[in-house]
Image (tube, rainbow over the protein chains, first blue to last red):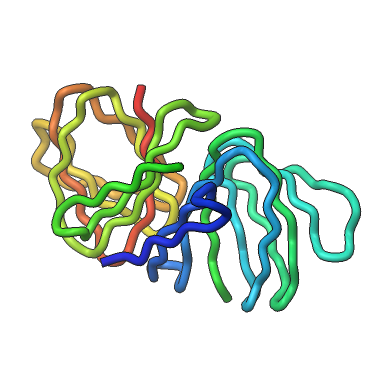
Length: 93
Length: 93
């Protein structure tokens, strides 16, 4: 059985699993802007559409498209902005 | 808010959404073999690991890897076999 977690008033939903790439979640975000905190290194991949990301200590958004990945360091905060339902994969290192 | 559905004794969990590629689900399957029925054309993509697929009317498994996609026709049944937790994207046409 999988753990399903919700965040930000259920605007983000994720399913925890442990597959070929180790501990991971897949989830979907509704249109909006979110700030996430990390407790491990996270490798995040856009599964459909695009995400705008503001990395820790930066002041400009970077855009990632379908199947693009980006890395966020441990114990940091980053912002995600999406314009529609956007599925993602997150791998914890 | 997203609809979360479970199938096969909760060994398959999926999240419905409507994003850049239209009506879709992302989900995860636990190790096992499953038979799914379609009510639309479905474009399925492996998100991590691999899936073995037996298409309608065929008798051999075909293997699809991370980010590979395959199409299943409307009103048909197909089998999926996975050896570990395997996340996928399914787009309904």
